[in-house]
Length: 210
Image 1 (cartoon, rainbow, N blue to C red):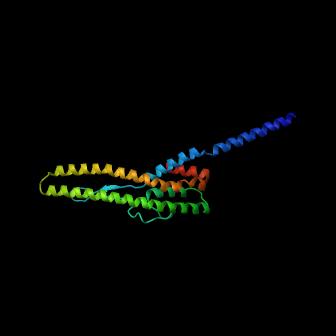
Image 2: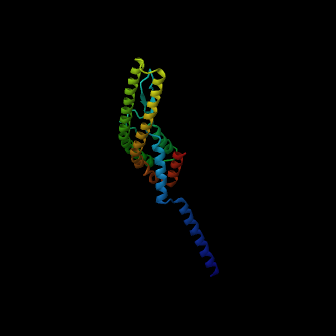
């Protein structure tokens, strides 16, 4: 009887340890949602870059949109060289994924690229229209300068003020399209915990978050 009682305690202890380990490896849906949102935010900030170039007496205003100059060119998982896509791809390639997982990821990535291209096209169009407006103002100031209606230092001051004013507008445009881009990223990232498994998802998230 005593031996049976002792054995029952041992079995209960083993069951408790097994349950505890399972609890440690599991993640609640709420916590997973928080992790996914965090990853989406970090990835979104890697897209839609823009650098304003030129804008002086000799050079017109222009915009460097990085690797997003051709938004209609949807890249495959193996071809994309955009900063945001590269981050996702390199983190996924660092995992030991089997062929089935890679096939699923490639399908998800194609859907992401299709969605992203629409957002990027609209973003690029807004930025280019804004740069065109800035350039028209620069030409007007340049005309005043050459006609000696304003001094060179006034010309430079006005151009700098113009650049700063429109830089804030560009940030607003970028933020707006970031929100448009997040559903595209979510369509890709939402499925990763299932495709990668808990250990793979944790490694991917750690790679993205840094």
